[in-house]
Amino acid sequence: MLKVITVAVERVSMYGWRSRLGLILPSSNTTNEPEFYNHLPDGMSLHTARMRLENANAKALEDMANEVERCTDLLATADVDAIAYGCTTGSLVKGAGYDEEIETRIEDRAGVPAVATAASIKRAFDALNLRSLAIATPYIQDLNEREERFLQEAGYEVVDLQGLELEANSAIGDRTPETTYRQARMLNHGDADGVFISCTNYRTFEIVEQLETDLDKPVVTSNQATLWDALQTVGVEPDLPLGRLFEC
Image (cartoon, rainbow, N blue to C red; front, side, top):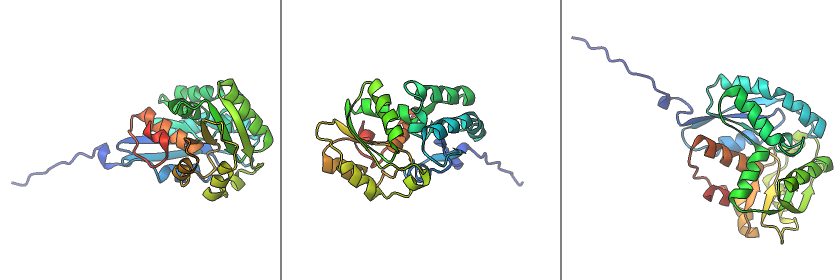
């Protein structure tokens, strides 16, 4: 007698069987996805939606956020377990509380937890007990001033902040990790508890651990903090070579 055996297809055989992470990011960002793709723990998958952005300035970043709900709706159809808003200045451009507002907008729309980079970096600073910071950015002066004010209002001391004055977001993505490293080394970081490298389109993953060794200080970067926060949110224990933050 011929027996027919039915094999159930379970989620374990699919991409994201452990967890699916949604990522909302600027359309011109060419760094966030590759850094996440190359470091996601086994069993996790990444699913993205993009908001139009060409230039990193305050008006463009504020206009970009009008697409949050559209991107959230698209990611919700992929049955993601959490959504990250991958833009630092884009989640602080309107000042204190704007990062939490972005998270709430996403959570209310998708019904899953959300993290926004500006909120993630503060959680990372607190996990590492960092109260004073030396900061490297690729931004124009206006965005540097907004970020400094945002962090100061959150209770952090900014001992130094240096930017590259790049407005075209594609130009930020074209910078090499060596550029990031050298900029961070040039900061006046002697009195700082740690170093922060801002911007999700600025490559950092290759140099975080070397920079921590050379500076003998914790280093937090936008993508590193966002990924760490997202993994905490979905309950996946990370084991990644991305600095002291991932040892917390």
